[in-house]
Length: 163
Image (cartoon, rainbow, N blue to C red; front, side, top):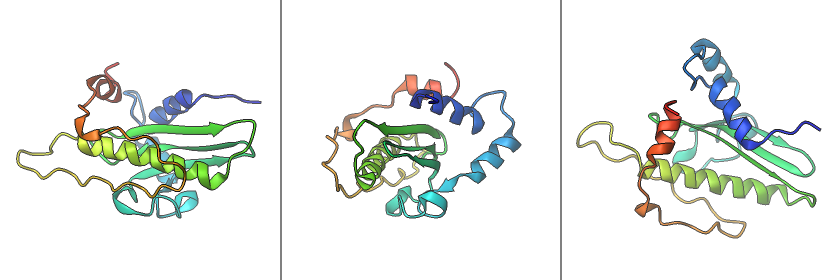
C-alpha cells in the first residue's frame, strides 16, 4: 500500500547519485556501482543490448502483477546525466514484454534527444553518435522530429541544480 510517484523516485535517484550539492561522492559511487548496467548484468543484462545505449544506463527494475517499473541514471551525455523513472500500472495487466519494449523506446528517445542537443566537448569535435531507433514490437510511439528540437535551458538548469 506504499505509493510513490515517478517524480518522487527521480528525486531519490538524483540524491543517491550525488546530483545534489550536499551529496557524499563515495556513497554515491557505491550506490551507482550496485545498480545493473544495461546490456551487461543483472536485471538489465538482456535489455538495451543494441547500439550505443548499451552500458549507458545504470538502473533498477521492478515488476508486480499490475506494475512494471524501470528507474535509473542515463549517462549517455556525461555533461548531463539524466535520472529517470518509468512506472506503468493499471487494473488490467499488460504483457510484460510489451511494457518493457515501450519503456525501452522511451529511453531510446531520451538518448536521441541528449545526443542531438549535446554541446560539443571541444571546438571541431565530432558530434556524439546518435542511437539507432529500437525495434518496435508494440505500436510505435508517435515520433517528434528531434532534429528540430532545441536544448531546453530550463531542464539543463534543473539538472545542474540551479533550480
